[in-house]
Image (cartoon, rainbow, N blue to C red; front, side, top):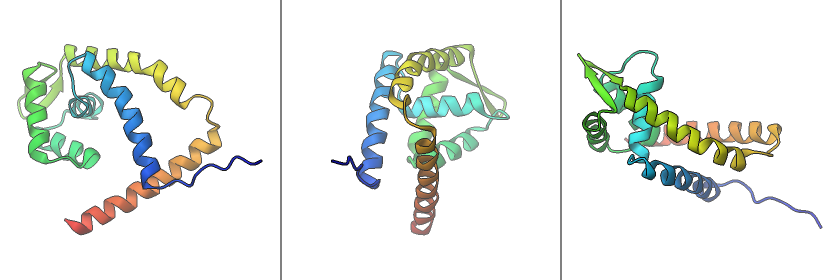
Length: 146
């Protein structure tokens, strides 16, 4: 008897995404932050240079394909929670923002290790190539629609 894995398709990708996101959102909820807030905060933390609000909205929109108005509201929420601060025309993370991302990252690290652990490197490389291709093609289709 051979064990054949199902072919990757949009449904399999969505199920994997939502299962992993569910784990992350569970951790984020304990810290009073949403998934979109975490994505935006992490973008500010990892930026090569402090972004402007418009740059941050564009980056998060590119990642999540969320409504720019909703992303602007998310930026306002992060400012209100004092996780980021306006410094002139740019946004910078606060110590509280850095600590929050460090805490949620520390909590999710062992879970991520259990989820991803034991998958052969060649399988991860193949999946990475497929996902990069799917992302590129889907972005092209979305661009054509808009």
